Length: 226
Image (cartoon, rainbow, N blue to C red; front, top):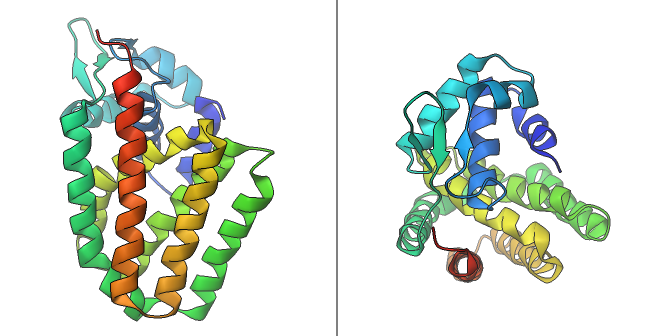
């Protein structure tokens, strides 16, 4: 998918600046926008076909979340993450899941569960056709679990930490084996929810997070140092 296609995927009913932020966040985390690259409002306004106002707001959020730094003359410079930052994000993500998942088990309906299993079936069907779309579908499954939890205030935290985790998972769009594994790990998570087994859910969710963490760390260790 192009940046424009990613933006359309994220847009939905979100404010434009949030869709721009999530698209650029993923691009920086995945290395599509390299560390040190200058990012200008006018350029991304044209790519996303929006005014410069949401671009400016998205740039500010990137800077606040440590993914970019403001530069003289306007715009920002992509900063990316380091390994210690990745480790902290995954620890925070695990804490969020411990808070949310008991509520997920309580609130999950048969209809919602069937719909999520359906998304995983789509992942399996599309794996050899469009791995970027599969990565986005997998991302949507995990995010939906947090929405189902209806845990007060959690989505704000999710937008910060979990957004990074799912951006890391998009790296797997370049790795067929890892993307297949993510789909299987999500199926195990949904099966534990279906069984209403909190201990099993914690176990399979921790396994998934650790696999994602290792994949992200190994990717960042291979990036050139500036």
